[in-house]
Length: 315
Ligand code: GLN
Image (cartoon, rainbow, N blue to C red; front, side, top):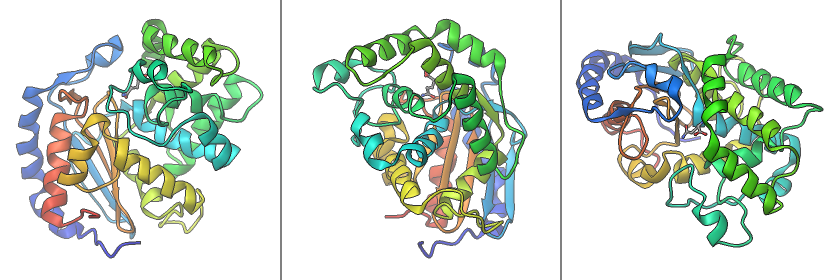
């Protein structure tokens, strides 16, 4: 635990104005369209919700908007795979290093032997992790993931956005290529279509900024829900997830984000960002227009500014 404080009273004073200033950053971004259903999101939307360990909250902008978790879900499927299989088994199949490549790149799978994904937050790693979730059938595995996410969100009735799921299932040929390559390398066992259905389903779980902030609060509490006192994740697994969020959570902008905001974070192509100040608060942001690195343009701007002003950086 750090001695960082949330100081939400202070945040509330400037948040609405800062959010409107950050919203302008959306103009330079693009809404993701490679999953056709995602392109329907508002280009200029921006919302934020902050929730501290006392249960106090602050929010601004389009914080009621729902969006799919996309890559944000990878943090929590990693944690569930660690709970299901233990650390050794997980790291036999995925590495611990950033790639410097795009999240959906296959480059290093072929270039660097023995062909295991570099980390669990790139698509190759997350698809491998999906295959390690316990359950007798793909449906049971997906149901366990959804149930775990609901518990982390404080009982929010999260559900899969079926239109986004179908849209990605129908067009996800790059992910299919990655999965077949993993099978060829002996990293992935079983049916590619079944594993992809689990992966696409957890990427398509729909949430609000409040849900993200609530899930992030569990990480801020080192795995114990600060509001109920219940332990939901072993502390060691939060430590692992948190480290990956710092080193690879914001794709190839993770170094820059660590310097400018200094917080563990994970973004998704829907424009969501989940971040937190350890020991103090959880934060959920959405802004669908993405910058060249694939992170929410306006969302990154707002979090960096907030963190600098509030001195939240861990470093
Ligand atoms: N479901 C998305 C994909 O596989 C997740 C990617 C992301 O959010 N970066 O492409």
